[in-house]
Image (cartoon, rainbow, N blue to C red; front, side, top):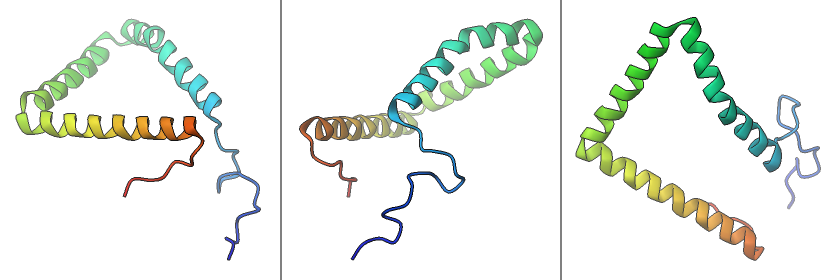
Length: 102
């Protein structure tokens, strides 16, 4: 039995083509590359607002990292994510389809 949408054009429901890996990578790299310039421009336009955001981010990171339970949860989530990424990369390198974790 085949799925009824098996032969449909690979576009999302909103009609936009799906992002390819290289397109996504390029856009992420461009966005990360623009951060220093954008932060500098924001500091010149509204220094107190930017300082407030930096303070809030630092305070949030301090709260998360000061709690043993939150550090353990963060380490667990990070290690799980690294394992899944490594598994997917290795399966693609070997040529096997990536299987979702059970």
